[in-house]
Image (cartoon, rainbow, N blue to C red; front, side):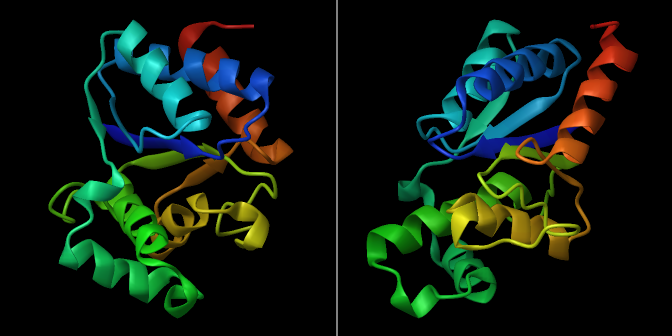
Length: 168
């Protein structure tokens, strides 16, 4: 049971708190977190996982190897217009979804983006930011994406917490 906990650096505080709590509870249930160490959503879920003494896999741009770069090129709509730094950031998102060897997909992605994109009901856009790369890969692999930036996805995660952890 592995999940990607990711999102915008500009995630609203109330959503950061929600993501922190979710990560704590998932850690206590043995879920492994994958994230990217960025400010905002990434650090919030990482702190929640740490608080719950959970296992985690954190990927930074320096991890972006040739295989991840190929995924970057395949899934990013304007790859040729990105700087090398941007390409490395985008490529590391591949590991968040598919694992260090690109052969161990997560069970789900929980994220927040301004446009609420989840790759199914709401497609990624410029407003999705770098998290869009992970969402596009997850959608291609039929991995559920719960974007807390859209109300139906938020309600699903909230319901999951209430059902599984008796939280109101």
